[in-house]
Image (cartoon, rainbow, N blue to C red; front, top):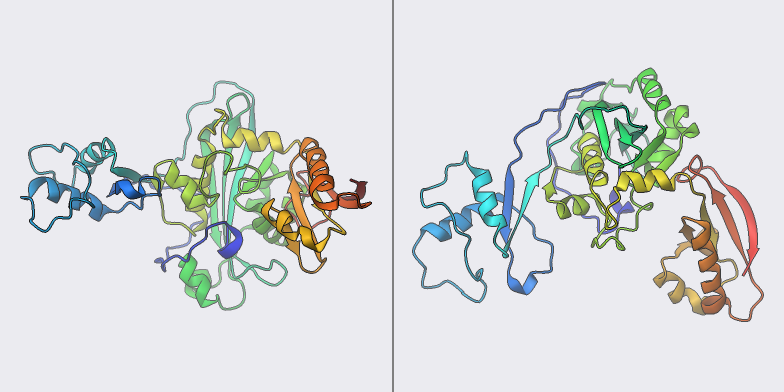
Length: 389
């Protein structure tokens, strides 16, 4: 789960209605995707549109009703999409959506429909990926507990990076042995009555994870410590993080938040429940990035690389603004600025920058923690060394 403040641009969510527990494997209903749309003023044409069904109704009403004398033309769309002459029934949302989508003042979002099969296998080379999400009682994996775990297991074509074949699904609640805080229920819709007496099936989780080549989560630094504390099998697996492992800003996205990434691709969904978050992440990662490569392919390739945690030890106080603007984070306990680097090339470039912009003529050595995919995003330490800059 990408929890509370762990994702950029996070916002509180309205309370959701709880649902009955599902256990492995479960069937996913493929309800018809109902599109929604909202008019976008030219003055905010570059802002992210927030779609809703009322926008569709208003657009149709404007096309059918006589012009009102009080209409503010400066705020209205420059022109309306051409809608069919006869009234549209509620059974025809797609026709309305297609008409609205052709107009520059509207953006159409469709409800994300979970996919349970990505087509037949043709004997190609594949790797098995698990997409994982958790809901928990809080942020600290040492003191808080998992209350819901969801996993999707799917093969990925090694040549194209596209998912192939059926999706194996596991989802279960777990009783944390203590009351769920009200703020967690407000975010997730999960209350004490839904988890009472429930327990995740250890054998089923272990069997599913053992088959995987890579485990992915959107903010793996949150999910990995929780699942490793509960299920030892995760500690021996390679992990990737779709939040940190892809530079979404460089890809042209305004946010790395999963809901935002989904909306950019034309989908909306009810977030902060483990299984639907997994389906949203899988479909986002199956989409092409700017270079045509899928997110799945990018993360599979990244799992082969060593990541570095660089601590800028001894950095002068006056350099704090430069470090912060470059993406460094402050470690209050260690009292040091640090950043994460995904390759040796990036590490070399960062050391050059530190010499030029932070340390100057000072003699300096930075601390490095090298982490491969079996250690990164966990609570375990990597290999510690020092390097002169």
